Image (cartoon, rainbow, N blue to C red; front, side, top):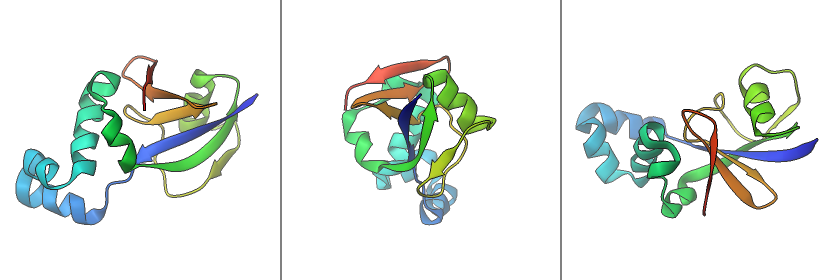
Length: 115
């Protein structure tokens, strides 16, 4: 087992209020964190840009055998999650770090991203 760090975009209620007022593209122009959210949610690692990393927060650490095991624990349970801050289940656009290497959850599997 190894310890993996999970990073997620944290979108505030105020940003979601702007989504309701300005629409997705308007909110993305006003809030870089929301721009990052839209890009990776629909484009995964292909749309990831290193500048997006500043909008990610470390949300938990998980001891797992591999990336698929991290995904399983983060969605179904069956292991210990050391939660650091509010988080949602692991999904497309989240980043999992192991020993300085960063992997984005894509619609099918994981792809390494350069940060």
